[in-house]
Amino acid sequence: MLALVTTWAIEIPVLVALFRFLFREKSRSFCRIIFTGLLCTALTLPYLWFVLPPFVDAAYYPLIGEALVVVVEAVLINCILGFDVKRSAACSLIMNAASFGLGLVLL
Image (cartoon, rainbow, N blue to C red):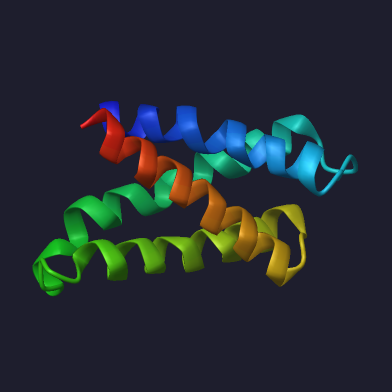
């Protein structure tokens, strides 16, 4: 549960900042952006931590796991917020790079 809350605390502000400041997107509601961030992490983190490990070699796990999470979250951002594919992928990649990087620092 701590990992989920920590990931939310990192990724949701990043998603909001990307939408509001980098892409200057004002048409999506603040609540919808936050909901999307919550849903992205809630749907991907359990698979990354509990479902995927038995199927992937430990040496490749961070690369494969994070790549799959980025793809799934990009699709969710695209579907829920209606952002184009490139920007959805950029948001997902930046969100996950931030949480992965800060996760390494916090461990």
